[in-house]
Structure formats: C-alpha cells, structure tokens
Amino acid sequence: MSDRRIVLLLDVFDQAFDHRAWHGTPLWGALRGLSHREALWRPRRGRHNIWEIVLHTAYWKYIVRRRLTRDVALAFPRAGSNWPPLPAPADARAWKRDVALLKEQHRLLRQAIARLPSSRLGARAWRSTWSNAANIFGIASHDLYHAGQIQLVKRLQRGA
Image (cartoon, rainbow, N blue to C red; front, side, top):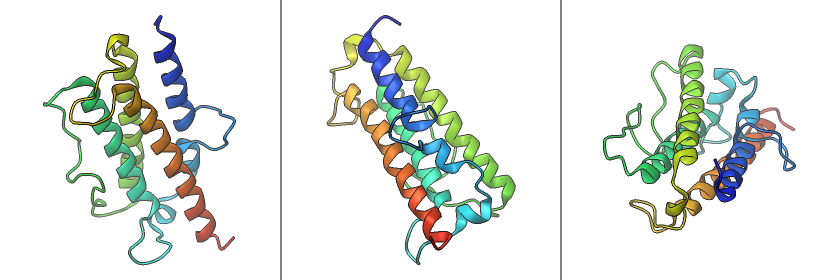
C-alpha cells in the first residue's frame, strides 16, 4: 500500500479498535474478560447494555463497509438494524458469537479500507453525505465513543 492517507486511516481505525494507542483502552480492550451477564447489565431501564453496544458497533462497521464498497448485496448477518435485538437466549454461547461477529465485521471493513483506491478517498460515500475518508475516520471515532461508554457502564456496574 503506497498511499500514506490510507495507511494513516488504517492506523487510526486499528488504534480505535484493538491496537495500542495513546488515548487508552480501545473498543476491543473494553470488552476483554466480560461475561455475558456483565454484558447484559443495564445502568437503568431504557439504557443500553454492553451487549447492545457490541451489536450496534458491529452493525455500523457493516454499514461503512457497504458504503465504501457500494455493494448492494451485502447484508448484516443479524436481523435488525442500528440497534439489533439481543439473541434469545442471551447466554454465554451467544455472547461469544456476537463478540466474534464484531471482530469479523472489523476485519472485513479493514480489508475494504485497505483495498479502497486512494482516488476515491475524497469522493462522497454511497448513501452518505460524507466522503469515504470521513466515513473511515468516523467509524474509528464511533469505536472510541463506545469504548468510553462501555468503560463507564462497567464502572457503574461495579459501583465505582
């Protein structure tokens, strides 16, 4: 890969998800060691739990990949959109599966970013008012926002 802009976007994308970064814990790190019971805990009725945030972040990685590739045949592997419903039963096996779904959606989006022609970085992303570069930067920011949210939910759960 020769375009330094794409290399930089991939670096930001990786740091927000699972690479070491100056800002602290990335999204993947915020999920490390969580049980399905911890992921189901809600700070209050009507508020999102960590499991819902995991599905939401996986969904938006899919959306950005679809925007970058302009592939109308792509489909999210779970029912629902934006905030997909939790599986039934919401047990340890389902939690492991949904965490793996997030990891896979990240991997697939990373591949799409790496393959994006640099000539399309400034172009408007499909079905978006933002450029392809802004969508990539935005999904990294989205990961960081939700990593912080998860860290806060964990502290609230522990009564700290």
